[in-house]
Image: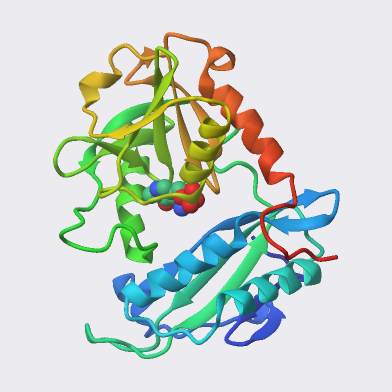
Length: 295
Ligand code: PMP
């Protein structure tokens, strides 16, 4: 993720990544009390452009508020720091990871103002370029009654880590998780869509992380007259489907070849997911989403 030249933003300063140090008594290490977000910059004809930067940093500040982690930066300041960081690292096609980690505190009480860290690096599509063979995990997503599933909390990700590791042990690429009520929820780090008879279906909000890519897919569908039905679906609803895909900033649009060894009815290139992946590629390469750009 970094080399000798890499610059990060840490505690108010741009410094070399190799010189960035943290406190071993932070609650974030011991209890997972940190929040983060993830966005991507794309090389466009007008220079580097951070896709949906405003939406991502608004969500970042909302996650901080929900975890009682005070932060004094505004969305505009965070966006501006991000563009400076890209410039300092000479990157225009990059993944961007802001993290707010808590101070030293071994008790389960608020730990004061969060420490801001922002890093950026070049990162391929997270789930790989190939189509995925996935299982339905025996782990469920966390219940919204036991924590905040709509905030991007570091500790929430232990769920995805065990589910993905178990899927790999079982010979799959990744997993689809159910919610605590047995309905389809999402992937380990991405939202889920499936296609039947020219319509798309996706789990409704409530037990899922409401992804920004998921919203963009809905926009694309609206533009192309594709119906998307949000609802509560069971694993049995996947027994005879034409296509399926994951969506996320890191994963982008990643097609699924099989679920529990059962192949999709259509080849990937004949599915709505493929069409949407192409449209998504066009959308991220445009500069119309916010007023910020390096040049
Ligand atoms: N669900 C989970 C559990 C995730 O970790 C992510 C990635 N942040 C998503 C969905 C997709 O969110 P987004 O499209 O905003 O990246």
